[in-house]
Length: 289
Image (cartoon, rainbow, N blue to C red):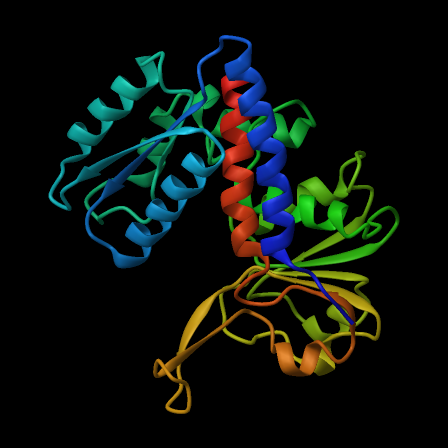
């Protein structure tokens, strides 16, 4: 079994990004600028945005954060988005999710200039991705493709099962793996909470992308020998035996599944680090227009 090291792969990608940013600056171009909008005080969101800021600066990308109160109105947020859309100094920006319940997420995403949508959520970017045109691809799927490439995992002609149909991971992942392109050409089955005979389907999979949002959902008896498993989930589980009183786990029962796989991502340290690295790559692409 080979452990897919997301931290090592992310470090490699960040070095590539840093070289390109340095080359831009040496050519008298400005450094790419990534902005993040954080509404409210959700601890996980604050940690994630801070990690993005730190990672940006490490590769030479300018970073700024707009911190707004949880009481911010939808109009106030839309006004800020309009400002960022028009700010020529900002190459890309994200509005960190989740947002407070009184704000319409779809309306916010649609208001972002798709050319600055480094999260890859705007309908224009999603549509371009579906058509196979150059676009800003959602960071987690982009990061997963990079992991598959880094570890030379063949997808052409393979049977891939994607668990979860979210617009952020599952759906774009199924499209990217099925289209005629490098790290594509796979036969993809997209499964979800209403899928029948799920075990029969996963047992036929050469590659499984687990993004179903349930801790340790994928069990050892659901995976065939030699399969590749990519675990997108991350959950905090109470555990009295752990030093912090909890442990982190993914959507995969790692202990059982890892005994049967050829390659598998750990949690943490697998897909997570690649998501931030892919976001930086999107910012670089947006800066290059």
